[in-house]
Image (cartoon, rainbow, N blue to C red; front, side):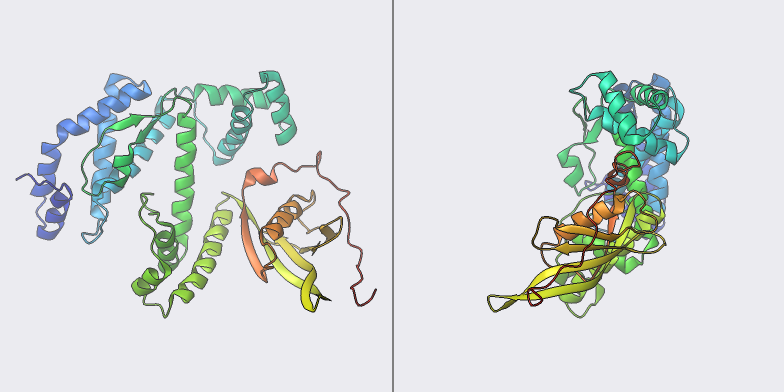
Length: 384
C-alpha cells in the first residue's frame, strides 16, 4: 500500500509495530534515494562509487532518527532526517574525500579566523591581506600562508542547500536541491554545521523546559534546525502550565543566559557578567536623571572583577576604574562599553552576555589602548 503522506509509513510502523511499512517505504522510494545520492556526488565532484556511501548514510540516519520519533510530532520524520543526514554526508566529504583534514577544533577555529579575514578583504592584494591577517591574529606569516592554502584546497565550487519549499513543507515529500551561489563553499557549510553541533549540545545541557521556551519563542528546532512559526509567550505559558505570559518572558531571559553560558563552557564563545554597583542621580528641571552608572564586570570563569563608569554627558562617556583580573588587554572592557551602550538608558541591574571569540581577538597586546581614560570622581550638580 502506498500513502500520499510519506509520514504515514513511519506512524503505521510505530503504531502497529509492523516493520513491513518501513520496509515498503525503503523499497518504494529506493530510486529516489539513489537519484539524490547521484546528484550529491555530481554536485560535489566526488567519484561515482561514492554514491552508495552517500545513500547508506541517508538510510542509516533515517533508521536512527526513526527509533526516537514521536508520532504526535507535527514535524515529519523525513524533515529531521534530511537535515541530520546532510550534515553527516558533508562530514563524510570532510573526513574521507578532502585533500586534507583539520583534526582538532582549535585548529579549525584558527583556520576559520584566517579564512574569514582573507575572504572579507578580497578588494586588496593577497600580500596585503596576509599582512592584515598577521596583524589581527598574531600568527606568523608562514602559518597564515599555510592556513590560506588549506582553506583553498578544502573549498568546493558549488554548495547545495534545500529549496524554500523543502524548508517549509510538512508533508514529507522529497524536493530537488537548488544549486546555490558559487561563492558558497563547503568551508561555510562545515562552519554552519559546527554551529549547529554546539547549539544542539548547549540546548541539551539546559533543562527541557528552558530548551522548549527558547525553541518555541525563536521558532527553531534544536534537533534538526528546522524553522517554524514562533509561539507567543501566552501560547508557551499554556503548553508549560505557567501562571502567565509575563512569567514566561522572565524565564526566557534566564534560559537564554543559561544557554549562552553553556556555549561558553563548550568553548564556542566567551562571555562577561555585568553587575550594577552604583548610580548617581541628579535633579534637572524638576526630574531625576541619571548622571552616571557604575558596573562591575567579570569575564566568564573566575577572577577579580573590573569596574567601569558610564556618564551620560561629557567628553568621555566611559571611564575604566580598573581592569578585570583576566582582562590584561582591555578586550572585555571594550565589549562592556558596547553592552552598556545597547541598554539605551535602561541600565539593567545584572546581565550576562555572550561575546563572539572573533570580537575579542581584535584586541591584543599590540593594538590594545592601554591609555584609556581612568576614573576621576565627578562632582554632582548639588556639590557644584
